[in-house]
View 1: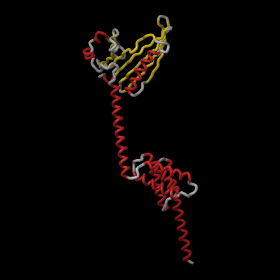
View 2: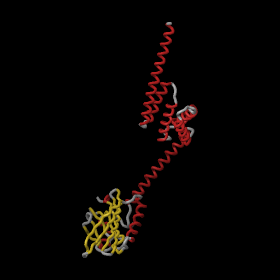
View 3: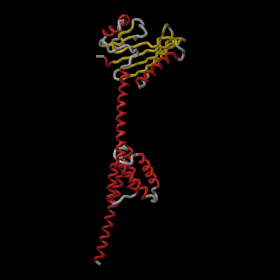
View 4: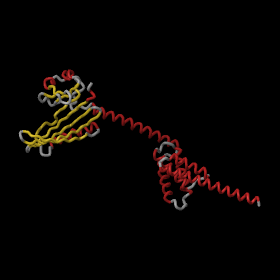
Length: 317
């Protein structure tokens, strides 16, 4: 009688212990689900390890959550670790084989199948995996190097750009006069945007219309590309000149200008003079290039002008 009682008591204790372990394993699984919802996949896998250790085995719910968590880690960085790739493959194979006839998990079974198929794109050996990882690393380093080189080329193209290729800025005023003797004859000082030099008369078309000077340094110039002249009602001639220059500069600088529009109305000889100015500005590292188109209406006349401004204030000492 006493022996039977002890056996019953021992059985109850075992049942209670088993129930307690199942409860703790369930809590661990819930912790894993919470970590997964927060995209903390490492913690998810750790909590699933705890649950399996307590139960002494896996099950469809645990293994499914493990597989989808591993898939997230692989998707984020496929060539980080071959071990997790191989382990995920094994887990998918086990799930698809062992739980093929389990009812109620059809959608999850399909998910695991898709993950298994996706993993086929990656190398099947650690040697091939390492070789592909190195190839990707080398390709990325080459891409970054080329990107940095191209970026520097673009920066240089913008910084060194001159509408007139034979005109140099960054020189002192005396150096400019020495290099371009005609400027002393054609230009005079004007107080425009700091100290600048404006032409007394129109210089040769291969020379700027005016020079920007500050602290005795010629840091820019402006020119008239297309002067005030009759145009059609759509300002086709001026617009064509502007579009040609914009396309040229965009292809050199590889960035587009900021566009600003201003309107003005005034009286000239008692007639209304309407004008719309459109500025296209490329600006970077203290250098500014502006293409300015002015569309004007004076009575029945349509007039247009196109000017170009280039200033590099980084040259000012």
